[in-house]
Image 1 (spheres, rainbow, N blue to C red):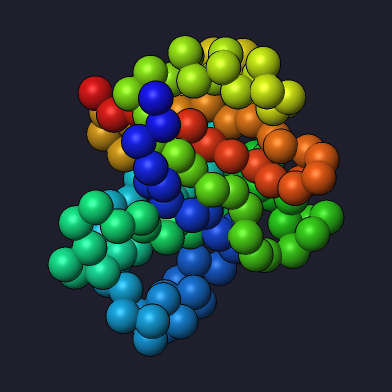
Image 2: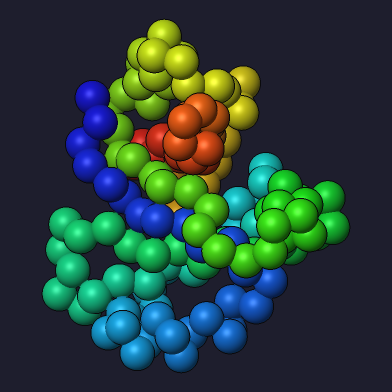
Length: 137
């Protein structure tokens, strides 16, 4: 079951440059890490009392063959994905496939936070939206 929005991902090649804007919105830097399978560095920003609120994640490439590097080259920085937390990663992935979502990943990958497993899918038409399913152990 999908439990709610975990975070909203922003593609950037300048995560330090986004910091003043996120801070001006009242967000504070929190978790950070690297998702090696995707070749990305991630920083999660949230409100200090934001228990249960989604985070904003900056996503930047750590190697040239990263999918985010390709996305930045083609489209520039901006909204990248919406991540939904689930209690059954593979089950929700299969269910959403039945509803027309197009898989990006064939199997779960390690996310940027400890205990985080993720899988990506597209809602191509009419939304053109990349979604991430997230499950924490």
